Length: 291
Ligand code: HEM
Image (cartoon, rainbow, N blue to C red; front, top):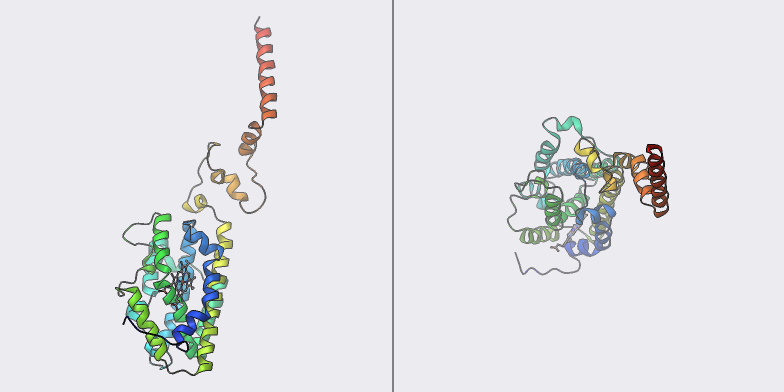
């Protein structure tokens, strides 16, 4: 498989070049940047996994529908690529056996899902754009994300919770991507159809970015402690964000914890001077009274 050479009219090249800007933009969304830095709260990671579950359920349903359609058939790799079963394992790990009752499809994810179903049922020649955008990404950057998530969320090294990122039946991702590119190039498509596929792949990137932006917004309203169950009782020291009053206000107004306000005020030099003077006066008064 190695040593293949591609020409500029090959679909794999058109897709790679034609989505480069979208890829850069996707990599630079706040959600992805935070994720790469390991700044992801567990609850948000769970919601991202939920979004993936709905997305891949739709994608794989449409791919199954089109598995014998020549516009898609050469890209049908259920054993190697399909993620739905892996995502169900992740759902069970995060939400328990009754995971189905506990999750719902978000608005941004629903738009993406609707488009996938439309494509699968009415413009199946564009399905390849959706498969390309997700699976090629998962086999590339997805592997970085797996390690980041495992470390940041302290997930077990047995890969529980991150089955999505584990491609059990792909022993060499690089080689598999080459096979996938060769299959893309072997599709019998005219120039305008190839252009529509590139356009659709950019659309798929946009749907992904909308999901990321939605997650980013949700992330800002979450606190690690609130979702881990049980708020910590703070001692006035350490991370202000651990204060339940602060947590309540996070992302809204300024922190409103009376304890932190008092502690912060007491740290002001002028206030300290006044406090010291008060203590001295009180001590003097007490001493005078005792005499
Ligand atoms: C976490 C941020 C990301 C990183 C670090 C990353 C990294 C990479 C890398 C290194 C490649 C090149 C792989 C190769 O040529 O063998 C790649 C390719 C790709 N990525 Fe990403 N990526 C990220 C986010 C995304 C997102 C959000 C998507 C789409 C939802 C995506 C879709 C793709 C696709 C479709 C390719 C294949 C390009 C091609 O060879 O045609 N990536 N990514």
